Image 1 (cartoon, rainbow, N blue to C red):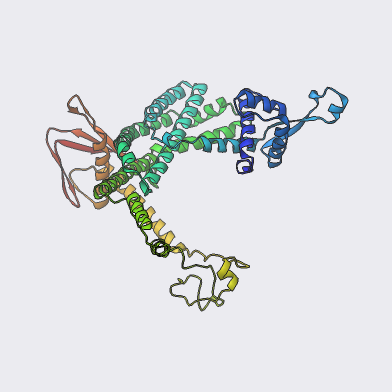
Image 2: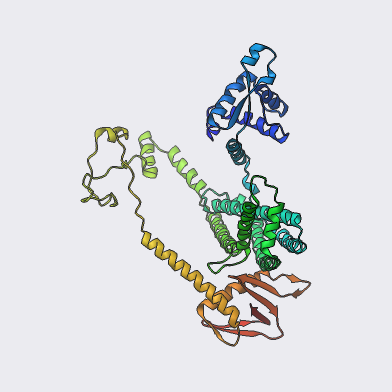
Length: 477
């Protein structure tokens, strides 16, 4: 299906498919070879004749990208009718394949950004959804749910692309210090603002989701399914689809007993990304201060090569620096696997006899397969169980903290960790307005902490010691 993107005439194939895509936007589905040529001329693509386009269309039909049918209406004579013309249109899978290739070619790395402006829209749509469900307005419910689903999908896609690009930036060794230092302030400010907005809006969004569910979630899904315009699905299938999407939306902002919500994971990932960027900034700054970088090392090495007295000396320098001449590692196993197993390192294993052809050309008659990866499923399962137990213990500590409160008792180790995490989120969300710091909140594992000003300082007894809050009081629910 994607062969057109790697074929010898891939540029011509893409031009032809762009013509079909342009005609599709004007509600024209069936195209003849002459129509494709006219469309290419009209949209400013390099011109191709109908005779050149016809074999391209036949090959695209052979790959399954286009569907072909007869068109006898173009015949002006009996001979032309007997040799009827073909018309082409996108196949269903072919159109999706073309869109995938088009999206890859049009992708720009500078488009990756965290969508913090989507959070107020999500909150407003959830309030609007609860009101529409109370009035029984099915069409408004359907439009609002579609908008919520599109906004959340775009937010998740942007976050994934942003952290993928950020990971490439942090891991690369070819980063230019000037390019990074010119954007470091904007990058750190962008991530801090997103983390602050996410911590501030997450409790509000969870509360709005609870209001929607209290208004009657089954009625809401039923009304949305009835107003849904997808004709090829039954009402029950539409209702099941919207129920699945609503479950995914709630998992984004409402924590479950099995673990934190997606917004909590995203906030933790943002904090970890800020630490990684700061580490990269420190590394770049130290590199500039020391004057040693990959570029300076290569320039110094090039000076050595240029100053080599003889060609043999240059070859010796190349061998010492890059050491690409030896050894030649070959994938060959010992005849007796019980004596020398495949998992043993070649540093410890005895040498194995190989053929002269394999040593000289590197092409054996039957190439040996690489060694099998040794997987310790028991250790993986043990680590997974330990991770789930830690998540359950943290969720239980959060529920215990919400039930018993933070004062008049000594908090345990897990409760202290939960309290410190909630305090971090709440303190991050505090914004001074006109010289007055108002109350702020933070949430984790379904527990909400409210940090409000108090006339006197308060003290929380924990297993690690006393935590003094300067003119602040916390309430956990």
